[in-house]
Every structure is written in C-alpha cells, then in structure tokens.
Length: 104
View 1 (cartoon, helix red, strand yellow):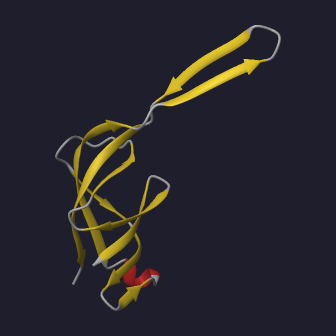
View 2: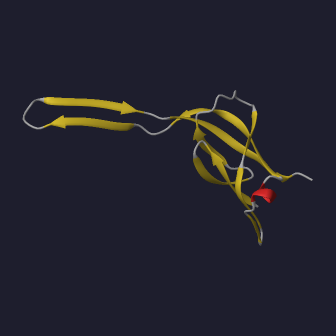
View 3: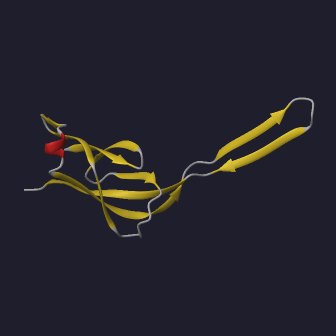
C-alpha cells in the first residue's frame, strides 16, 4: 500500500517505513504529525475520491532537522569588475512514515 500525500506544497509518494525530507515544520523531534492524502493505492484498488480519502490518515514521526544541498549563486557583469557570490542551503524536516490507515 502506498499513498500520495501533500507535504509543504509538494506531493510525495510514500509507503510505510519511508523516510523523506519535507519543508521545515515547527514540530519537535519525536512528535507525530499527519498528512492529507491526495491518492491512495492499495493493491488493485486506487482511491482518489475526496469522500473516500477523508477516511485515510497518514501518520509520520519527526526524526529531526536537515539541510539540503548547497546552491551557489553567482552574479557577474562583464567589463565592470562586478562579481557577487552567494550560497544557500534549504532547511528541511526529516520524517518517517509510521502508518497508512483507514478510519472505521
């Protein structure tokens, strides 16, 4: 069973036990969070109706904060001696999917 979830403006394909990086959340390490489902696939059954998706919960445990890869930004103008260098590392929260379950 896997699900497509909405996490921080992105859609991610997750299964139970997956570890993924989502945009920085304000949750503490060890906290449990839930994600809204966009699509659920259970073997041959594909569930995409909003009424059916409301019955599913995708829970995850926060593992900690991580940073993305370094991005180098270079500004240069020819013949003027103008050079500017800037770097950036996007902050992420690492989460582990603990369960995809249907409410009864």
